[in-house]
Structures are given as C-alpha cells and as structure tokens.
Length: 164
Image (cartoon, rainbow, N blue to C red; front, top):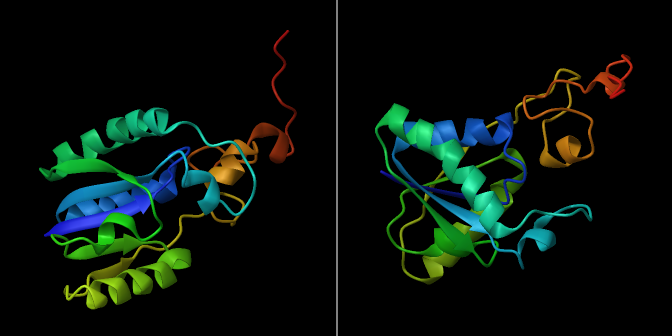
C-alpha cells in the first residue's frame, strides 16, 4: 500500500512518531512537508517555524530508522496547499490526527471530482503529555513539555537548573 500524510513537523514529537509508525505499518510512505509559505498559514497561533530544509533534514533522520525497521521506503515532498499531494493518483491510505479528519474528507471530495478512488482514512489518536494534555509542537516551543511529553522542570514545580 502507498500511504500519505502531511504536516509541518516543527519540532517532531511523540505524537508525530505515532502517525509515522502507523503509516509504516501499512506501507511505503510519502510525507507532504509544508513549504515555507504554507507552514505559517497552517498554525493556530503565530510562532516561528523553522525553514523547510531544516525541517526536511530532521524529518528524514526521524523516518530513516522507522523505514528500516518496517522494511519500507519513504519520500518527503514539499506541500504547497493543505490538501496537496493526497489528491494525486498513486495513494491508498491517508493518515491523519483527530483534528485533521475534516481535511481528509475534503481530500476525498477533491479526489472524487478528479475521478480518483477515495483514500482509506486512518485516524491516529493523540499522544498525551504527562499532564494529560495533548503533546504539540507549540507546547514544546513554548517550553511547557519536551518532545516526549515530559513537563519541563519549571512546569513540574521544580526550579529550572542554573547555568552558573
């Protein structure tokens, strides 16, 4: 099977890793990585997003070990629109998180207009931080949690380590 998913992935965290793992369980993976122009438009809040090339390099490093573990291939492509590459021929499955399920339905509507078969939509549940809230890149960038959902020392009631 040919599996597709997309995102900004800045930074990569355990929630993303759950998406990637499910994708590799199902088949060869193509990831649409948001372009420098699209990335800020897909954020719910205004924050800096690293460059496409920086994100691509980190994403490739992350995917390499999973591809090897599952004996699958992967490709990273630039995503210039929210529905992007998933509306192209050649894919069977679309991996999404719960908040992007509506976007997956929009992808299948566009595919139908193009005379393409709908994609099987696989929803991967959120991964939660130790405080019970969803792990997100924004929470990591804001210093609330690390990429695995552990609370940072100042958020966990412990003083931050001194650099003296």
